[in-house]
Image (tube, rainbow, N blue to C red):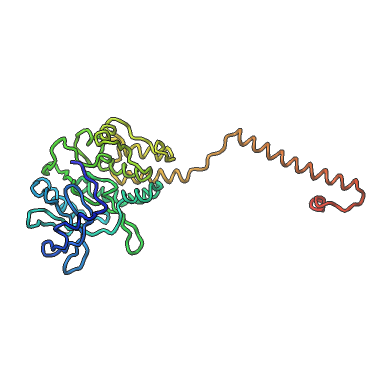
Length: 353
């Protein structure tokens, strides 16, 4: 199952959405469409009694007969509700419409996802990229500690919100493809089925192997790479082409995308994007910590000394200029003395006591 990018502009078609203007479960008044994907639509709604704006995620009508999809929705609600992390979107409620479709009620985030940020402003410096991803990395480690895999970490699922006090927070959203890691957990995905977005799924998932925590770490490394370069490491015309390349080829370097980076930074990126899961960082936090150390080392590195020949040539040139100036001054002084009592020139006044 491939994740479908969310729409940024609903257009006129949303005016005919039958849920707009309705009250869901007697508590949520639907106001507008926020975003949509292949299986669900996200609405802005107001919770009655509290007057609180919320995000209402509802299965599309065509998906209501899909028992697996309904189970995914309910799993998403349970998964997120127990995380309780500031960088994970909160889920308040879950239920079903009269026609059987599952809905989730989540915190309404007033922000912009990192894909839109890249589209509007272009790539960012490495330090800024690390700053943006530190919170989501901690959240991802919390997700893994809770026995879950996200399986769809990408810029569209990382939302930057500016709080009233001026602080920034990036939240990890959309757990619709989340999977429990416990051995006895029910599997909603058939073995060999690809789940995720091709540009961000790990090489082992591209080959049809099961995802693991380091698969999510790989996806986060892809996002870090894209924030700095403006493009994901692998992005072919077709999804199949992208998957084949990342399954067979080593990851590209930042310099290959025109970004100057130290060897230490390149090494961190290469490890985060390693084809072998065992060669990657054990956690998302470890990836970001290593990137921060490498970036700091590159910033504090002493300026490279010029080659010896270049320094020697510069010293010889400086010595020549000094000798020339001294020669001119001595010539002026000698000429003034031969003039017999003539007033000293400006040079003599400057040199003689």
